[in-house]
Structures are given as C-alpha cells and as structure tokens.
Amino acid sequence: MTLSKTPLISIAMCTYNGEKYLRKQLDSLVNQTYPHVEISIFDDCSSDGTIAIILEYIELFPQIKLKQNPSNLGYQRNFEANFQACSGELIAPCDQDDIWDLNKLEKLYAILDDNILVYHDSELIDEKDQSMKLSMGSRLNFVRGKNPSPFLFFNCVSGHSMLFKRELLQHIFPFPKKGFYDHWMVFVASHYGSIDFTTECLVKYRQHQQNLTDILGAKRKETKLQTTISRIQRENDWLEICAEYEKQRQGPGFNTHLFEQGKNRDTNYFNFGFGFTIWKHQDDLLHIPKQKPKRRLGFAIRQIWGVKTKTIFK
Image (cartoon, rainbow, N blue to C red):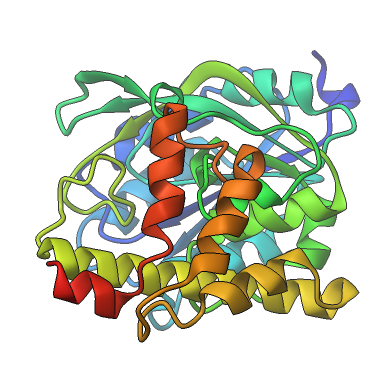
C-alpha cells in the first residue's frame, strides 16, 4: 500500500484530562501501518498533563494537529467540531483511553469498498490493560447493509470502531442534543449507504469509571424501578429523534408510528400496540442483542406495561 494510491484518513481524537492512558493510545496511532494519516486532536479544556503530552508528540510527529477549545464543548460537540475540521476523505473517530491495533486503519480500509461506513469488533480491557475476556461481539450481533431499523432500540457500532466516508458529514449535523453521536451516525449512515464490519477485534476498548458508556452495567446505582423509568425516557427520547428525522427526510413512516405508540409509556398503564409492533418486527428491532427467542418475547411483553403498572408491581 503506497502513499500515492491511498486517500488521507483523518483520525479525529477528542481529549479531556486524559493523561493517564494517553501515551499508549498515541503510540498506537502514530504507528499505524496505513501510510496516509493525519491526527486531529481537539482538547476540551484539560487541566492535567494532557496538553504537555500532546505537544511532546507533535514535536516528533508532524501529522498531529492540536486545537484547544477556548471553552468546554462537552463530549458530543467536541467530536462534532473535530469532524468538521478534518481534512481527510475518510474519518476515524478516536477516544483518548483505548489502544488501537497497529493495522486497524489498513484493515478497515480494505473492507470499505462502496460502503459509507465500516466498523469492527473490540476487545474489552481493564484499567491495567488486562483483557476482560469479552468483546463487543460476544454480547451483540453486528449489522451490515442498508437498514436503519435495528438501531431504533440498540446500537452495536461504537465511535472508536468506525471508519466513514467524508460524504456522511453532509447528513449528520447537527448532532441531536440527546443520545450518543455514534448511535446517531450509524442510524443516519444506514439511510444513505450500506455499512459493513469485520469481526476482528482491532481496538482494546478500555473500561473504567470515567467511561460515558456503561457497557457492562457496572455503574448502575438506581433502584429497579428508577432504572426502568430512566430506560423508558431514554428510549422515548431516541425514538422521537428517529421519528423527527424520518419526517424531515421522507414524511411520517414506521419510525413515527413506533414513537407514537410508545411515547406515553412513562405516564400510562398499557401500550399493547407498541409491544405487538416490536414483536411483529423483532427480526429487525431486536436483532442486535444476542438473546434466545423467549427473551425476545419477554422484551416485547415488557414494553406493553406503562410506568403506572410497573409502579403498582414494583
């Protein structure tokens, strides 16, 4: 693979007080086997040694570019700003605390073809770099093709695992104020082009108390009822976002119908239509979680009960 025949890939890295793990991640980025890379770092007002570490690397690796935000943008808006500043034909989001396999970009580029976005599996590691003997793929089924429906309830595509074409930027801004940018991006990408994946684990995905996403559920401290109410609210918020996107793009359709059926779950007793629709379309809506058929049925039945019913039987 030669420089003249490969498009520029921008690694879009966002940092905030990341000194603890940053060097290992930067080492894995500057040593990628893919030959044509820029590393765009947007720092969100770090107060530790993050900037000093980045400046050390910039002296050695001119492909690194640093932007220091004048005020704190937050995780979502920082990635949004970074993507817009990237120069590459292809863009790969990057967190500050993982460790990339050195051939990650090369392998993703090899499967890109006509897809608008590709992604990979990731191995979970702990704070001491030790494998947790789990991967994203051990818990989730992956999705390929051009079908946004599996992303209406679940997501299997982490931002750190993506490589996407620049043309996707035309469709994803602004990011919704609720939810996660990676979930939004793959949902939108599935409308405009096909997505694909490799089952190879190409990132060591670090799990610790500062993770924004709680893959293992280790940080849940709410009661069962509180957890249920929070989940319903998150689902309703996301389904509303998907419904609004559908209306703007093509007019009301399945997403809108699903949202309308379930939007009152946090204030009513029963939602029979909502649960039946999920059961009827389970092959799409419940594809991502790895679960047996009876658990799919259980999921659909649970969606029937509104919060008032769940409060009675708490």
